[in-house]
Length: 325
Ligand code: DP6
Image (cartoon, rainbow, N blue to C red):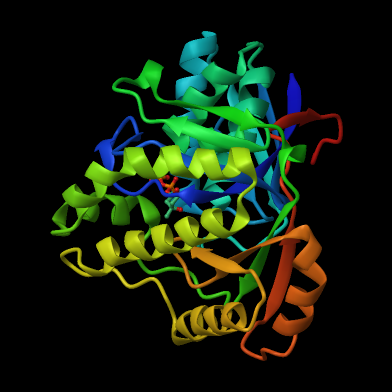
């Protein structure tokens, strides 16, 4: 059977950085995110006896490293479904990959839903989230709708994401500021392993529970100022861990830091916007919808921004009838 799925990338408000279990991708702490409307992946999967090997095409290209990771995930799904056929996989992203915009989140969420369905399985969201997590940790958050919490759990079966609120719970916007298309030098999976070498990491873990409770409270109350303050300082804290790892991980470019300062300056001048950033140079700017027009206008003067992608909260992974091949 041929199946297609669409999954959105997500932005973490409290971050997944460091794992309890590297192979099973069980995070060191629970974390909270929102799915992003305009960053998404469409993936078509077909298992068929006519295929002699798995063929993986992402954004029109074949890449050995990506193929290996996708084939490992297909093997897990084949085993679960009790099938042996090889597959053709075609995947299309609406945004640049490997620059820190979480293409592995939308990619593995779409792959999981499409491949599971093509293999003849019907799984609940919880099981899909667990499976997606095995492909890429943050992918488990792209399965459920809207605002999401990934409960860290202690085993594979207890580590999954669920929807805290649907997408229409809160009118907030995530404006992605593309600074450069430069690919990151240290892949995220390798970066995670270094978290434990930072002298600040254990201390961070002690406070994550309380941070997650507060983050959920601010989302529940739609308290944007408290929420934004927490999210921005959380991103900087994760990067403090990265920067103080051995060896040190610096994912930012000079323009990233310049924009952080611009955003803080704009905030001082009365515009309620906050930033967050993952393993890359591009920034995510968060604001309430009522301030979007002013935010976009003020950002349009900054020549260091190559492109803006405006995202509203979005649904989770869904099947589609429009196949890519
Ligand atoms: C900094 O999910 O990409 O974006 O499980 O190794 O594939 P793997 O890592 P990944 O890590 C995302 C890290 C982050 C923070 C976050 O999204 O929570």
